[in-house]
Structures are given as C-alpha cells and as structure tokens.
Length: 114
Image (cartoon, rainbow, N blue to C red):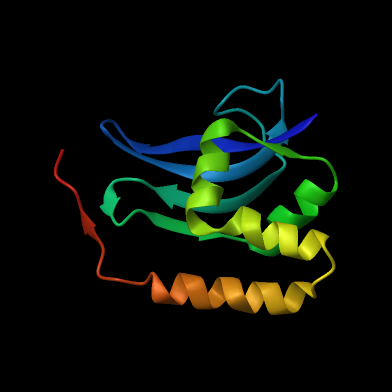
C-alpha cells in the first residue's frame, strides 16, 4: 500500500520535511517512489510547496496520506480542492485556484527562534 508521508531532512534541531509517496513498510528515511513537495514548520507562517497534480494522481490511485500530512493538506485547503476534482470539476481550474492560494501566502517568511 502506498502512503503519502513526511521524510525528515535538515540539520540537527533544524528539521524540515519532504512530502513523499512511499510504500507503507519502508523506513522513514528509506526508499521512496516520488517527491511530492516540501514542508518547513520552522518559518512563520510555515512554508509549503506541493505538486498538487501529482498528489491528486497518487490519491486517485489509492495512496493514503499519513495523519500529519492530512493535517498539513487540510490547513492549505488541498483536500477541499481534491474533492472538487473528484466531483468532476476540471483539474486545470482547480490547479489555478491552488496557485492563486499559494501566491497569496507568499509573505516575508522569517525563521522562528526556538
């Protein structure tokens, strides 16, 4: 079974994550099938870059997001847009909406001090 989950990257005490598609049994930092995006919780607001068209494709083929990825997707509205695609709305229109959302989120991002 394929899962969409986080893979930790970054230095010690400075984590950032890749959003990846991988087999459920593979280790956290082990082999993966595809990189779907990037997530950095240390910036304010958090940084996220996602290839939504690839996420839609994986989810359509049965990939299940992990709980943490599900929370991230809900916070940026990706799951709502995926439901629109599933209900028959053209994917190009939904992807344009996603691009507008990500452009509006482009604020000056500062790294939080721990």
